[in-house]
Length: 166
Length: 166
Image (tube, rainbow over all chains, first blue to last red; front, side, top):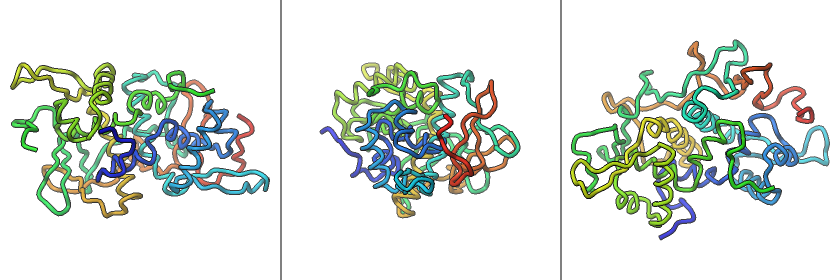
């Protein structure tokens, strides 16, 4: 039973990956955040095959993550711009970047992330509840809206955490 | 110039995707967060082909995201547990989930995320600087440690934001 799509999984993570989980897609979005707009610039920055880039851009436009516009500077040119939906991927990119900084670069990354206006560096993205409390994975509970708690994230070692009762 | 790996890109996003960007990998990590530990349980929950699951698990162990342990309950059984590096992927999964909740489910998702102890629901992950200021994409600046600012994320419309000077 090999799946080529996650479309039928009722899970927001699966559904998001269905849209942005293809090889290259998030790097194209990263480039858009960094200011690239033109096909040739994406292509050159990423060293990606033109046909692959073309397919990925088309899908990103179909999904409403990028929009295709005529350049305001040159009417013969097409530009790709992030939509609100696309800009809203910033936390995904930042979470990936921070994980990479911590676990792959181990602090030796050449990049810094900061407040453009004050220079203050970013802290790590942390889940918070509406009371402002920062949550560790073990404090997080995922429940169905219409039922008692069903999915409890693993919190390292839990008593009685066998999965045989599914 | 088709790349099959992002290994040579000096970017924490690319390096993270190199490790967790393969189809299925993040869903396996999601299942580990939800308490699955055994090969058969991952397989059944995800409906993934055994050979693909086997390859992905092996890579996750090699990368130090999961660890392979003999079950404390049955010495014939092997379990896969998240390491600290693996648990630290929580913000990545949560960022993906929240984006999906917002843009795909549009509030109709069956799931809620909350503080296990108080029931308070989570708010959206938001980048903050060390002064506690919440940053929109346009407020974020990415700079090289050893140089003046080089990479400025696109902030919607910026004056003079042509990329011809790269």
